[in-house]
Length: 307
Image (cartoon, rainbow, N blue to C red; front, top):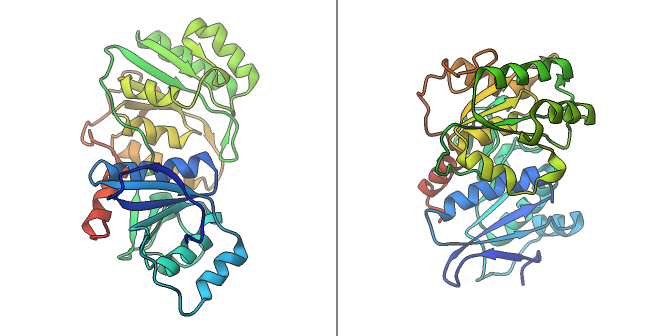
């Protein structure tokens, strides 16, 4: 019997099993699903999701002696979020299966078979660590609609000063400079006053976060040629790149020691994204047309022979 209850997601009876340990946070689950779905595009695998086990149960499994042999076991176990770490280690010991953690872990990286760590965490150079450009995600490029564009507006965060006047001025300049079929989307962090101003500025082209479902953003990014993102929404920058969009960043004033923005700053230095006032995105080098970190990490995992 499995020490953790499973929720079956996909796969056939003969597929190798990949388990996702999820702490229930959408961002963490998005990363794990992005990785295993990339693997599933290359191998016949069965994907299941399960919550972390209780701390005492996990500790018992970690330190138990003489564990039973288990025939029905995963070929790979994946998780993101500090709350998943103890369960990942317990399952690794119980099933003798490799474990991948998608973050800088709160315990030694040596406990995990593979750590996928964003470059802003400054990961060390070790055989079991892969440095990623941002967090992994599930985005996939689709057939691009000519003259299409999406503008994604974030909101106040601990890393940036939210200047509503400056954001609106940049959006207005962008709309005036680039005559595209724009859609503007807000987030759960966007202040009501900013949403009201965007609605006045863009009319029906503005779609508030309350009117979008979980599939809205992937659908829009898949078919959009261009995407502009406010600087506070770093994860959206990586999602737009993965979806095959040309990406620009609407600037904000940064707080001191903002490591989250360092990865996006590096993308700008490399010409992979651009920023204001390069409204036509002429500064993009086009040297990194295929940007998909989930696909790259999936290939690296398959090279290890675990599946």
